[in-house]
Length: 575
Image 1 (cartoon, rainbow, N blue to C red):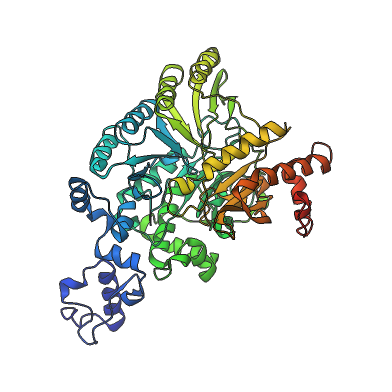
Image 2 (image 1 turned 60 degrees about the vertical axis):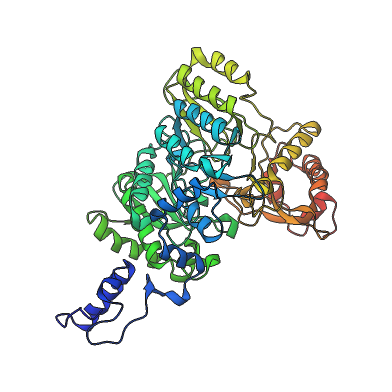
């Protein structure tokens, strides 16, 4: 940078070189370097170009926000993006999932897991015209459409825009769909409605170039402390509403937890830091900036926030966050206080996402619709939208349990609403096995999937339903690969897809996971078990539980009381 002059000392010159290099402006000055020093190596946020992984080099070559002309060209030619081009395109929400599923999959961005009834109807029309005629509710409370021909990508994009929807920043190195408690604003136990802050932070992220194409994917959640969980403690950042009675001015705050990634065997851990709910937007922005500046850009396997925290420590990260806040929101101060004065969280209703439940306003209810691992046909999508418009307030909520809620249904309309939904197979009751069954897309639609998770999940549920009636729910999570999109480590029973010794489809089975008040990682039971044998193994497991438990002891309590060495005996295996 030969034009930087000697009015700056060496430290100032190096700082300017670094800053301009991060912005990609060093080329305007003829390359790296300064007046008195040899040219410096180009880098991205302190990482030399030679050390960047191939994905980071691709993002430097073409920022995902600058690829619109490429998208138009692929659409006009009816061509699928491949390789690193497809990696970039996932930032805009379009995923090449061939050969597992035809064409593109899109994943919507629904901050707080909220959409309107008319938007659900519009999505049904898009699915019918351009996709496979169905959708899936995901484990981040949004929707996926599949089987989109490359020639229809722009048609889908503009149809979403016309409906006030977007699929932007739902894949690859993005801050994924921000989740909030699905009963936000009407939960009978809610401490505070955090939905407005969730949606504001989501908008700020999408409006900021700085927060696009970050080092790796990033999950943020807002938990209102209500009866219905949003599994907030599995996120990179978890803002959890809490009532504080002392130490500081009593009131409602958000406790900040960091580093959740249960597929890598870590829950979000308490930082010992609080903030005011209104400050969560700025705090979230600052934390993302620290991740952008310091996250690992050399090794994709070590690029999540957890590994930055492991490397530098929580105190370091909080200190860097406060420094970033000095620029973003100078008046915001993080509040250091442990949990001694926090009021304990109220109980979580593990099947509160299914059925008719009262809201905080007297005489008003939400209806939790039972879905088969998230699947919705076009007709079902339209009916949900119509019922939300006719009997509710045009409000639809999605849950991380892969189902749908329709809130604001007055007592006098509950029977009519549930009857209308039931006409299309959208019931509001489920067995103790079906209510907590969660499955990722699996091998049917994901290149990483090693098992047909959704099909296997329904086979397991149907089989166990014919054998047992339970007095408490058992959550069964099936994930197709170690990435654990279905978070198998927090299921009462978790299954992770794998290959059997003969190359067939199988699962590793783990037991005893939980979240919120039941937090804990599942322990290994057995595996690999051939997919065809899983039903029998789980039947034996449930029979052992019912035979050996104390009174009405829950499955989770029972298996947590069994030692690691004794677990195999539950399915009659030798230890």
